[in-house]
Image (cartoon, rainbow, N blue to C red; front, side, top):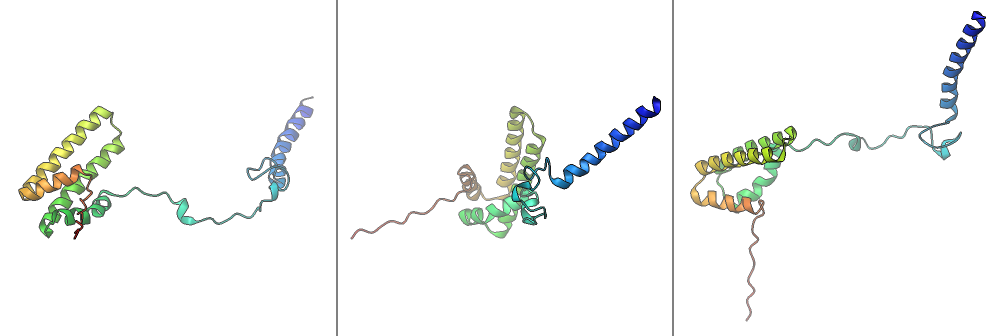
Length: 157
């Protein structure tokens, strides 16, 4: 009796293993379609665009600041030393804000930390820039770094 049960269990186990091969061979339960032929899909793997498979890395603080620096320099008319002061301060501030986002603090704590970063940045810029350029930078910052477009007056004559 024991040998018949053992033989039955071994046969059942081997049958289950073989079933997996049958399903894989004929496409039953295939994620590419139904039935034997997979609804006309090719079984040859398709080579898709490689770039879309890569995860896009978020821009770094330096990249974000480098995008904004030309418009800031043009709007405030910064010399190379002043550009270095503004760039360094902005890179530090943006990096700290990115780190805060990664930490995912609660909203109230996040707001406090962002205010601390802003106060530190403003103090650095006030120390490194002349008063008129500092004020111009603060105004530019309030406008989200969008330089004012000069309107051309039409001469009616």
